[in-house]
Structure formats: structure tokens, C-alpha cells
Image (cartoon, rainbow over all chains, first blue to last red; front, top):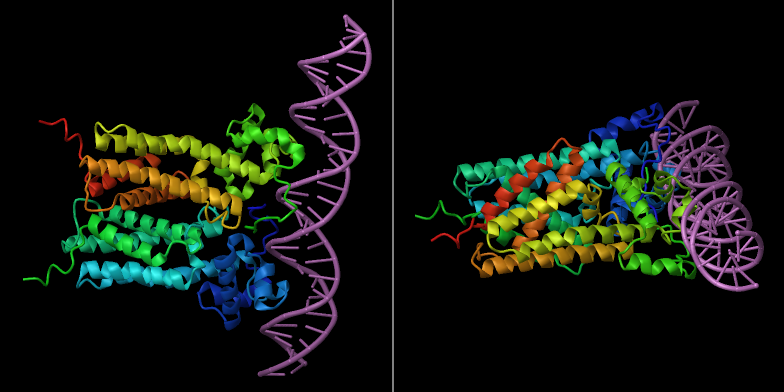
Length: 228
Length: 228
DNA sequence: GGTATGTTTGTTAACGTTAACTACGTTAAT
DNA sequence: ATTAACGTAGTTAACGTTAACAAACATACC
């Protein structure tokens, strides 16, 4: 068994020979072929876990040999970074949406949870990514990025709860950030339990329970303003 | 970079040549020498992450060669299992304590969080273990054990909240298990943020915030019974 | 007390495997 | 004719693990 780390090699990250690729994946716009590899990588992580995410396996999944992967990503770290970028760009909108619509606070919170969990269901590979801080604890690059993603999500959620509090749509005797943390924490645990259980626990059940529980704890009113 | 997995070998787990060791580590009583290796392994995980936990590194940390490790643990899986056993045996008492003392519910909850986080501070290596479900997702043995630990802790916590509810010492308009889940989730996220931040975030701050937040959310009364 | 015997704990040296990555030649399309 | 895309073949390094052997030490027998 191996759960090992950086094969500290003369890391030619963004070596000059890969100049043309640099722009492509940094700006988060991938070539069609890059997307093929990303899809394959995602599939591997979701079905077999991070440990099986090797260049070999990605190449095999796409139907090419290992060196072909290096035509499109300078190294494995770049591939992982690209995956993380892709994740965050698909998750972030859900967090933002919570802040936007505020007709019915309970409903928008429900939509938020539902939407987020639908997204995860659609892309099961990203569940593991969410908890991967420990996995990439000694990959400085990815670690920083993961930290950034996490605190970014906390910030957006905190903003949302602040505006909810401002409109008296949820309890105000607790800091907005604390509600954001409890929410994020609960989402994570739910995802983790779902992923570990291998389908024994239904994601839909967890979602409904979470909505009810957090709604009750945060005293999210169902459309109070529009009542006479 | 590598985050790989089982080197599916003819797994001689508990091979006959290691018969004398079987009893020693299964019953969770380790020999002095085994404890040396466990301590070293724990130190490595805490300081460098799971990926650096190799037989090589453990041996080097103790000051012996690799094969010497195999005198005390049949294989790496056994070492990891031993670590997990050790973790759970040091964590569980804190969970149990929550149920026992019920003079002052808020106080006992505070004690629970404080005690647990003190334990983690004392053994920082076990923080990563808590979130390692994803890391060991394709190690059937460890995965099962981790699942077991998680659901065990949820069960104990649920029991505690049920008795709190029974004595009307916390809100009853939400299921006990949901409070348990929210609590565990929040603890996990706090631990994760602390561990990732590399000391930038103070554990003490997180602890206090968590106690206040969950106390407020669950309406944990401070010694209501003894008041006239 | 001295000698044989067995156990514990370690070493040296190697095996088989897999990882990330690369030098270089080849093909197909523009 | 250029270039993007891929294959062949190989490198280096690390992994878990094992076999064979040796020093240290306690125990048992004479």
C-alpha cells in the first residue's frame, strides 16, 4: 500500500517547451483535447479514488500512451490544478446564487443546497476533491489553492447570511460567519458520508434532512415578508 | 507527485511467521517497541502528511533499517490499523463523557469540546486521520474501520443529545441525530481549518467560537435546573 | 560456572513493481 | 514543409516486502 507524495524530481513545471499550453489552462479555458483528459481524470477519481489517478491510467482511459498526456499538460500537478479550477468554476455559481435571490429566504436556501448537491451528484468526482486538503497537504501549490477555495466559499456564504440577517430573515443572535461555517461543515460531512457509503446512503435523504435541520437551527422563515 | 494506492501483493497479512505478533496488536496493547514505531509514524503523519508515511521513513525516524519495522508489524496496513485503533481509544472517552455528567448540560458540552480539542492539540497527528476517509477510499480494510469509527461517534453523540432532550436541556424541535451530525461536522471543519492553516488560526479561538455557536443553536441552558 | 539452545531484534542485499517523466522517431493534416 | 499529436523505449526513483544471516541475551542443562 502506498499513499505517497511528491516524487521530488527536477520539477519542470511550466518548462519552456510547454509555453503554448501555459495560457490555455491558466485562464481556465481548455482545449477540446485537454477536456478529454480532464473528463477521464475526473472519471478515475470518482470511480477509483485519488490513488488511482496516475498519468498511466488517464492515458489508458483516453486511449493513448503516457507521453501523449504530456502533450497537453506539462505535468501531473498541472492536471490536478486544472481539475480543481474546473471544480470551483462549477461550484461557485451555486454559492453566489444564495446571495442574489432573496424573495423567499428559506426557498433560496433550499435551492442552494439542492443545486449544490445536484452538482455533486452530476460530478461525483468532485466530492473527494472537497476533502482533499489532507491528501495534498504537502503539495504546496495545490494546498494553497485548496485553502483559497475553502476560504472563498466561507466568505461568500458569510455574505449571504449577513444579508439574510440584515433583512431579519434568519436569527441574529449568532455571527453570520458561524452559520456559514456550520453550513459548510454539514455539507462536507454529508458529502463524505454519501461518498463513503457507496450508495447505501441516498444523497436525496441527506439533502432533505440537512435543509430541515439547518432551516430550523437558523430559523429561516418561509416567506414572512409577503404575509399581511 | 503520487497519491497512489494498494500495491496489490500476495498479502501475507498475519502470515504464520508473525503469529506471535497477532495477539499483541489486535487487542490494542502494544509492546514498548511497537509504541516506538507508532510514535514515529504519528510524528511523520502530523508533520509531513500521510504521503510521507512510508516504512522507510518510519524506520529512519526510529533509527533502524526498513526490515526492522517488519519485526513489529506484519505490514504497513497493520501499522495504519494500529494507529487508527490508538486514535479511537484516545478519542472515544471524550464522546462518552458527554453522556455521563449531566449536572449542567452546557458545562458538560463545553467540557466535551474542550477535552476533544485538547486531545487533538496533544496529538496533532490524528487530525489528518479524521478526514482520511477519502485517502483510504480504496483500502477496503481501513475504509471499513474508518466508517465504523465515524458511525460509532455519531451514535454516541446522538445518544448524548437524546438524553439532553429528554431532560429538556436542549431544543427538541430537531432530531437528536441531526444535532449530532452538525456537531461532528463542525468539529471536523474546525480541525481541518486549523491543520491546514499551519498555526495561523489558533485552535483555542476555533474552540471558543464553536462552543458559543453550537450552544446558541442548540439552546443549551447554563444550569437551569439548580435555579429556584 | 560453563556450554549448548532458542528467541528477540536487528542488518545487508535484493526482488518485483509502479510511479512521473523524457529523448527521439513517426504519422497525419494543414 | 511545417507542426501538432502520438508511439517506442527507456530513465530514475521510490515503494512495500522478503530471504538470509548475525549479534545480543536470556534460559536450560551438565
